[in-house]
Image 1 (cartoon, one colour):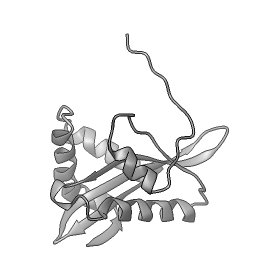
Image 2 (tube, helix red, strand yellow):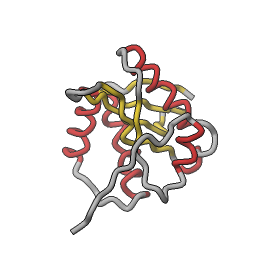
Image 3 (spheres, helix red, strand yellow):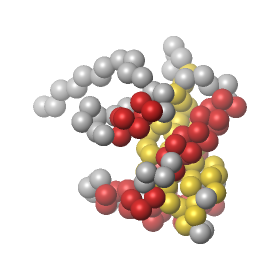
Image 4 (cartoon, one colour):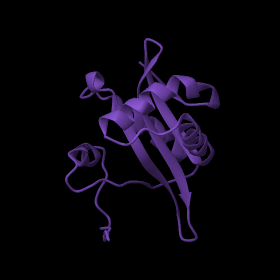
Length: 140
């Protein structure tokens, strides 16, 4: 398996896995233009790490560097691995590459948000993430 930071030239190869992400999580299909703009935004503000096997993207992690008036930190927005490759450490390797990307940029903290009922939080705990605040919302 090859792990690499995405470049603009990777978009066409990235498109199918992003569409698979939308299908799996029942997110309404987005236009190719929307996906391209989001892809460019991640490359501008952070990175997309790709896991490639047999010239096919089997997983990705998209993250950004957030720069607020109070602090600068990394933020993992999405992690997705094809079903047949889950449980094999792919997401951990994607995370490791992203954290190294952040270190090289002088960033010393990374965050990720997860719903309380999402089983992925157990993976994030294994990665060393800890709950440091609670976010509350109201739907109306």
